[in-house]
Amino acid sequence: RKLAASPDESLASKAVSLAGIMGDAESVVADASKSRNVLVRVAAAHASSLMPDSPQATRVVSRLLDDKDVGVVKLAARAATRLSDPKVTAKARRATVRMVKAVRASAQASRRDRSAGMAAKRGKKTGAGATKAKAARKGSSKAAAGKMPSGAMVKAPTGAKAGDMPSGEMK
Image 1: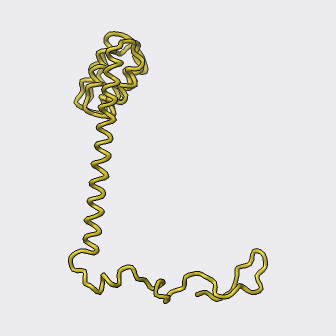
Image 2: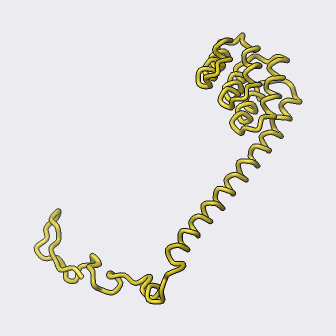
Image 3: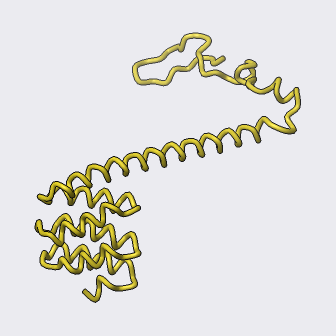
């Protein structure tokens, strides 16, 4: 109980997980579910999945399903599948839908930000200060102009045996 109330989040989360594994520590898990620290609440959600089906476990899982952190909700929804209360099961389904929507919205925002960043980067490369000569040269390379070897053989290799490197002229 003392370790679970520790200000050290790493120690507190481990203590809560251990309490869940040991079994008869429902009050420790209930207290941890009210923690300000996300890591401790995640540990409480995991530990609640190990608790036996009881009214206190139902209250803890119900509280954790209302959490704003996706990790806490995910583990609490998993814990709700082990409980017999249909209200908590329905709440878990709703929380899962809410969680999926939040994750998708976050992913879309991340993609938009990444696209905007890439567009800005392209704009810097070709934007202000680019002259017409630079724009005309863009896309032309030494290989395209025929000034560098392309790797294609001009004439067939001579004297090559199986396993030997071909020796011929390159373009």
